[in-house]
Amino acid sequence: MTGYDVDLFVIGAGSGGVRAARIAANHGAKVMVAEEFRIGGTCVIRGCVPKKLYVYASRFAGDFAAAESFGWRLPGKPEFDWRKLVAAKEAEITRLSGLYAANLAKSSVEIVQERAEIAGPNEVRLVGSGRRLTARHILVATGGAPQMHPEIPGIEHAISSNEVFDLPDFPQKLVIVGSGYIAVEFASIFARLGAEVTLLFRADRILRGFDDFMREGLSEELTAAGVRQLAGVLPTAIEKTAKGLGVKLSNGEGLVADQVLVATGRAPHTAGLGLEQAGVELEWNGAIRVNDESATNIPSIHAVGDVTHRINLTPVAIREGHLLADRLFGGGVQSVDYAFIPTAVFTTPEIGTVGLTEAEAREKYAIVDIYQTAFRPMKATISGGAGRTRMKIVVDGDSDRVLGVHILGEDAGEMAQTLAISLRLGAKKADFDATMALHPSAAEELVTLRTRSARYTR
Image (cartoon, rainbow, N blue to C red; front, side, top):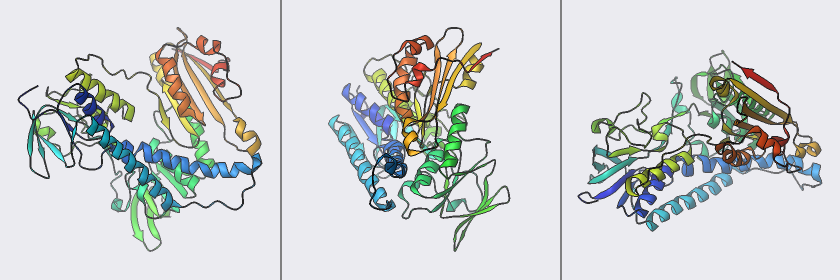
């Protein structure tokens, strides 16, 4: 590894880039990382970490409401301080960003806090200083960025998921555009913190791509939490007025809001990186085209994480970055296995899922068996809560192998993580049935659910 300034130059210090940098350095490579914003990337700074902190904050409202049913006497009405939450969030992500930087330094990775662009197959340029460096390998790990769609008059008055975490004042009236997991998570958060939330989306139902049984259940839960859902309705204009933001809708209605959050998806952050000039092939949406080994058509240039628009999840980016570094500098040959990746939607209640949905299974398998249930969680029997936990198990009717498990309820994400191990190991429905139940728990329903709800053949 000679003849270059560094062995690996990483553009982007998010989860995938940091993991690749550290593993490569541990293999003995000379590594440099350039980050133009804050070390930690989307997940730590403006994504999953601050979002989960806000989710925790929002759930206290329900806990306070239920406490008296369990014998607690509350001295007064709880009050929420938005600015205190924002400050606490900022302190935590600053701490985590510092840990990321410290871990890079411990691995002898050099950090450059400025924008970097690709100047050639083995060369990068630091935009601020104009410095040029050669690298044996270049890794692009710049993640994604929010899309501000639809492009309508006044869209500049709206905010994205980047800005929503740091609003100076709590929005009493919030309009959210979108129906994906980011949109519904923020709808759940702000409604439970006390905002009047209206959710606008093009589709007929929220969370396209998730199992329909979960989509239906979460829609009901959002309505119960006070979220107004307008399916098939989008904003046509946003106007700043003395009373706030006037939002014109495609159904002819008008709304006034303190903030309009556009959460209509994210796009790979590839603009202005010099990829086209270096000859790197891109997908139609700007994503970097890579093979199974995260390599582009230029042998010395690689990409991992959301910038490739494969599966846009932090653990996926970390695994891709780790295995790429092993392959380039440690003699590794393992490829990323994208099967049975657990995911969660951190609404309240949350969705935890792993494997195929019913619709996906019915497209791929000749016989599909469905086992599903909906029940009142034990906590609600005393508090009087109206929500219901939902569970679905999707099974290959020929082999009895479990193809997917989907849960809507408290700690659904935690259950999905452990279930992913079983599904990866090829667990069958008979294995679930043979497993002793843990009582009393919601999870026990997964091993006591014996009656088949439906069988589909083709």
